[in-house]
Amino acid sequence: MKHINTSGEKSAILLIYTGGTIGMKEDPAVQALKPFNFSQILEEVPELGKFAYRIDSYTFDPLIDSSDVEPSLWLSLAELIEERYDSYDGFVILHGTDTMAYSASALSFMIEGLTKPVIFTGSQLPIGAPRTDGKENLISSVEIAAAKDSEGHAIVPEVCIYFDTVLIRGNRASKTNSDNFRAFRSPNFPPLAEAGINIRYNTGLIRRPEDWSRRPVFHKTLDTRVSILKMHPGITPQIVRTIICGQDTRAVIIETYGAGNAPSKEWFLSIVQDASSMGKILLNVTQCQAGSVNMDIYATGKCLKDAGVMNGYDSTTESALGKLFHLLGLHNDNCDVKAGLESDLRGEISK
Ligand code: ASP
Image (cartoon, rainbow, N blue to C red):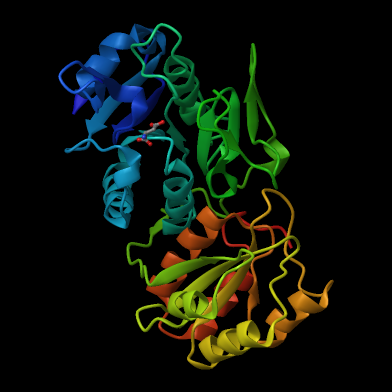
């Protein structure tokens, strides 16, 4: 635990470092980026000391490239936030960009009734690089995590991603660019804030808890028996059956075409029906970057609906995965899982 001294302390922020490019540097021995000690990040961003906040930091050990993220990291993050919830006004999580949208989605479901900001950020260039985007991302994330309204409530009590001047809801985000500074998009929901000279909050869109005085509920049971079937021309019956009827699979996200369409071929529908009657939960999410599933437009979508496939609406795949892990962990009864999938739990779908 590190502490940055600032004067005239107003808010307390916990900076949680999990790994990722933001804290990496070139290892000359292997000529590749490797994570370095978090204390060096603080040396790189002396600007943090200018805030009138108390900023503590927590570093995960080992630090990981986010391609190695597992649900165990989400559990550790949820536990850490739960343990320190009363000591801080907001949390900033430094995380690799590759799986940040998965982690932000999962955390949004794992914490119910959030009253404080949990802001994920990272960078495309290491914080020590001359043209780094990491400094602005980190500094603005801290400012957003500390921001309060006139009543002293957090302005953004949500799990979000802040990147390249835009704050987006975590469970609406996807990484859409591997080298542009604007790495994340929220195609189906407007930004919650945009940073220019001032940070402008879209307060009408930001979710607020029903009761500010109630502690959130931390859900720490995840059931990961979920597979993803991405439809493509040429997919074979063997592959479809293996992915959706596997005995270790409890739910399947089917990434369909357009507004939720899949082949109308007899063999495909019969496998989907088999999976349904085996008790698999099947969720239809579009592989389009934006827009929603509507299984009533085309006959191909209607067949899926008739076979018991559920509507994922405008959910991202990342969000659908986190939601399913959470709902399957919470409920043994598939009817309860299905009711949860139909509901907008954390602002993740628009119906
Ligand atoms: N591979 C890195 C990670 O996700 C990329 C990044 O941080 O941007 O950890």
